[in-house]
Image (cartoon, rainbow, N blue to C red; front, top):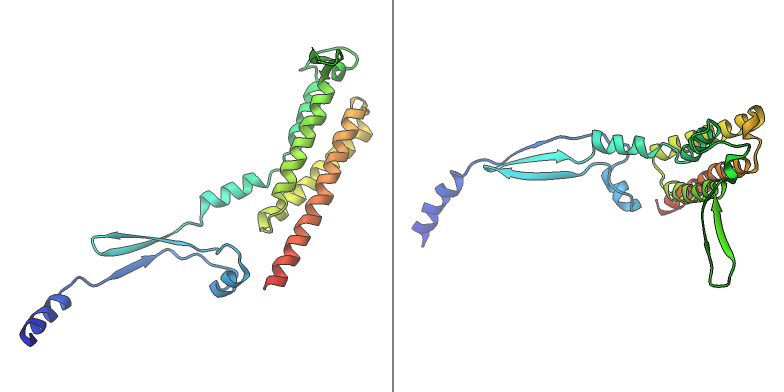
Length: 201
């Protein structure tokens, strides 16, 4: 038995040494603090064993950074652009293009339901407001940029409402109020989420 163990010892020592290469990115918080706070760690490693060599890759990087930057773009810019396209006559002419009927159908009660272009614009604004409130729950640097850009969009709504003749409309005013709610709700949700994270720490 002793001889067999002596023969197995050189075999184990002859094994290839384990080498590890890691791509490490800087982190603003220690790993133990990140784990204790319940937040997602800023550095994750995925290892691959290739011929006995373990290679570590960081999952954080340029693709995630690009997604965060695209996610910071305020979605309320969409109804703002659509309204200005309507002022240019893209959706039809007339004195008030927002009164153009898109569709209508008769209900079981005998009444007729119809939706105009202005109603559709308000519906789009409400959907975008919901998506923006979901985005505002994040507490990252990209969300701060999102709030700043949302404020700029509201300022653009306000300036156009005061200076452009075609923007003096109830539809545009409603979209401007939706943009204001987006700014206020975004800051309120982010501050509440940040205070909850501080309490956990």
